[in-house]
Length: 140
Length: 140
Image (cartoon, rainbow over all chains, first blue to last red):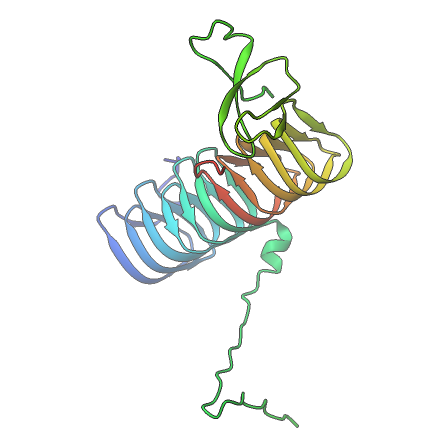
């Protein structure tokens, strides 16, 4: 496990904890347990070796030693340690991968990746029962 | 970097020979350490065995060798695919990379294309774009 002081990670989800939902915080968090949902922070997230996540994570920086299914976005850096298991898309300014890490997904790394990384808006227009697609509304 | 060839155990000519894995069919076979190329005895395709340093711009349809492809700082590969025994990237690569050995990416490297490798090490600062599949059993 990476060395860190308690001030770095004021919030800790313990190994016997099971969390479902959306988490928002400012400083840092270390996860040892299971988490399902979404994490949004400008701070640091440390996913410990025994942690299992099914979540989309948006953070300042991410240190991954455990298992994640979901998309990761970091404005600064993502570090995948030897024990990391990750499945999903990844976007970060910097990426550090140690040999032995297992991951699959689309990778977009570099200063441009974070800048241009606005969420894509997809609009789906459902067909009406008559068979014709609805006409776009006129403006002005 | 050394070629990832393993000496054949209990072989009378063990020091002179090494096991190579075919890039195309994935079968292992002995080959002389001095050989520059061999024909796979299973799929009958030609295999280059030497390391390949890339020091300048090279545009090719494909780059194939059982050795290690090293793209130096001023090197650049533009290809449909790179099939290799290992890869060290300090320059730029625009290709689909399939490596049977580790892929090492320097901090100033730039890779555009999909990467399939048993392990990956990335230095902070590298620019990556593509679909990555790392740490899974080798493809055939």
